[in-house]
Length: 315
Image (cartoon, rainbow, N blue to C red; front, side, top):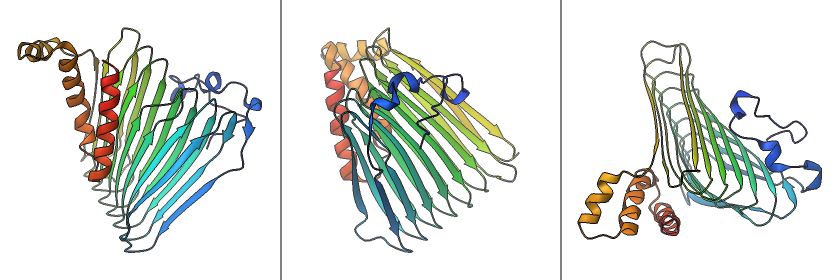
């Protein structure tokens, strides 16, 4: 959670693409709500009734400081859906803490559909034990300014951590995803895979870093950010990083930003599709690669429906 009296500045390297003080304005103008805290604790081996949902709703004029703590003990499994919404001008200043014991599995989906004036900052810390698995997915559709700041620590051998997401933005929306994957133990795997479609004057930011500590041999770390700009005024800032202090690793990163490819558009048009249909199919195929990584079938279907609705509205 951020200190509301000492906000980060764009002069700081990790915040150089995002001007939070300008977005939130005068902090004193908000009505501060009592902190809301949700704790989810699953005992060793727990697998029953493993789908839970949380709704975080922004309230006009409010500064909210919600906290989420998730503890999965050894062998526990859970699918969690977080839904973000709201109306009016507000700031959700959130903190999330996740602890996964040995062999625990968390499938974590965030559906961010905040109001057009809402600000969301989510400072998340993830601690992973041996053989644990974290499957994270975020869909960003709403919000005026959103910052997801993730610090994942793979401290037990053979852990696997994935942060995947889709940004569908228009108008003057600004979404910043900043991820630090710290590989502390051997034979761990991490994946960061984000795709963005930006229209209007929207701005997307992806800062992904893989830090492989000394002794974390056999690390497999992967980062990829791809963006399609539908407007000449849209912007995507990408900063992938690797910091490696072990000599037996496999790490890679990549990033692309561009417009829809004219060649496949021409091909689809030659097969009888009109321009809007051809653009829709290309954009849908672009984001579906990330949607397909959602583990829960029902959640995957819901996300597909939301994505389809947004893409059709962008035509």
